[in-house]
Image 1: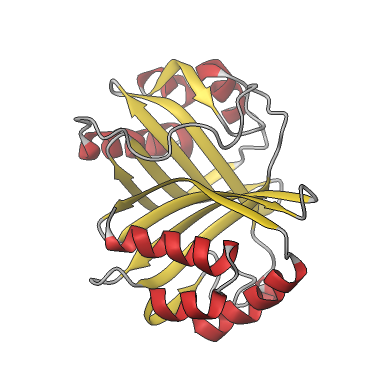
Image 2: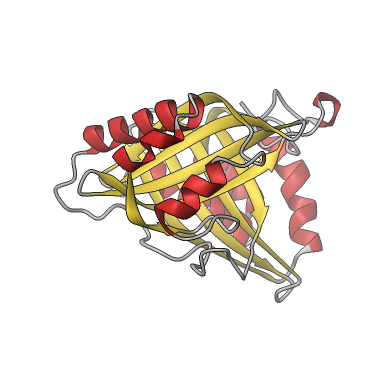
Length: 256
């Protein structure tokens, strides 16, 4: 595990799950901490202004990191949060930028409710905890996902989906039905809207992540999509998204 990935795990588990927020954010962030989670202010004090009251409101916290990986200075992790003994359940996807020492400099996230009954019948958060560790060609897998995102998502050529996605795709995004046909049907709906911007793409081995902006039903949407590539095709998909609130509600420079 790289230093940046270790620090991300520590700020999540020590700072939030275990409640030692002040020490964790001070120890694991660098000379700046630029925040894109719109309810949280920049810097150490912005983090504490949000999370110290959060910890007081939620003394019963079961928070686990379900999968994570690092791509150079970029770190991805996805967590499941069970608060108040099941009173609230959330799934988060987070992306971090770290410095040469692995200290966290910048953070983006999306949070969505955990959905127990999915359209595909596959749980939102199950699956491998990280890259397979085999002989996967990371750059080839990133290129595959980049072209899928460009040609199918951004340009809207759904007819090309067979070139990129396996027929038996394992689907974790709760509103999408199983397989390539389920994904194809979803991408044709008004709910998909217009894919406007690929902000960042990162990967390690068989796992590739995109963070992007869509516009659908009158709202701008921040969306993380995580793909597992197998034998040159997208074989598994996790995804959550969050409507972006009005500018006046932001506590920082925004989701991107």
